[in-house]
Length: 486
Ligand SMILES: *Cc1c(COP(=O)(O)O)cnc(C)c1O
Image (tube, rainbow, N blue to C red; front, top):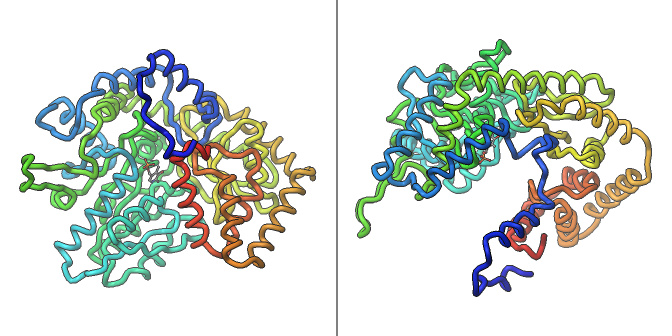
């Protein structure tokens, strides 16, 4: 049914009937509970999940917009920010806010940098930020929303940010440098110390995106693993983002954005005093803020405590190490770079990793496909601690299957070469249509993969016209809200 034909039902439906319907519609959703999904969901065990639900439900109706109305929420947020700041190397001056997620935290970091520059460097009319190509797309979103020019710098051979190349990309308009701890695609930590020195030398800001590492690296370090310096203890670091709803194991809708001091955070805040409805003030992008997400984040941090997070981190790191060792023992595939914790990418010099992706999907596992270079992505968390052996066994089988010539693979390869040839030969308009077809097979991230995506990924990675591809993906995003297309 197209969106336009959908109407609010005239009469209501009984609760049980609705819940049953919703349960039925989950049928095709990713089944993360059996520990075979390596993205999107973080799970710290049944009791933790129960606590999150109870805490969330307890503050289900409360609104974090007005801190004077619900002092409990204000207290939760203050304590969550304080605990996070302390974990991330604050010496006492760090301040921040909770946001709805990593994206909002990064939007705030870029916006704050722009406002800071307007105040401190008013001669800059076209602000720029310098970031490694591996930085999260939320920075692109921020650049797009706030009119800050993103200057992309290739990473070094070890997939870490190339600090010298980033310094060389600084212009008189640069206001902000970006580093990640770790970057999502390959799980490596950028050289934050060097970036800090560069930021200080040029009088600009440095944001560290610790959305993934913020609630993991501090514990990994305490466990004795080598973790490069990345937090507020590094001179030059001016803001850090960290996602509670990832390795903080909080309910979805929780992240923090932290600043080195209140003076910098001041540029983030918004107030409007001329509204007939009264004085309106709000620290972050949203207006109404869900009390449940704030309360659940506070609850899980206090439920686990340092000991709980350390225990979880230990088991996750054991699992990640086992998987790394296991992968290095499988001929033909390898881990890209030196991942600092539990995110990693599987690449190959001899096999088509997208075909490997199809084979491992056929065995019930969900790994995201990456390009530049082609690889499969793993985010290992507590949901996976009992599954390493099974995963490695299935992976070895999948590699063997890719090695064995089979008709489907041959079909894939033929389709791929045909598609590549066509894209080069066809007029631009037709090539776009072909790409549209291919991406329609893919579906937006998280919508579930088709069984055989290898030919399509192979093609999309090599498309000459990225502009076309962007248009096609936007069409897809538009279509995603249309239930008729699913
Ligand atoms: C997940 C992630 C983000 C974005 O966070 P959302 O919660 O998805 O908005 C930003 N940076 C990194 C490194 C991430 O892994």
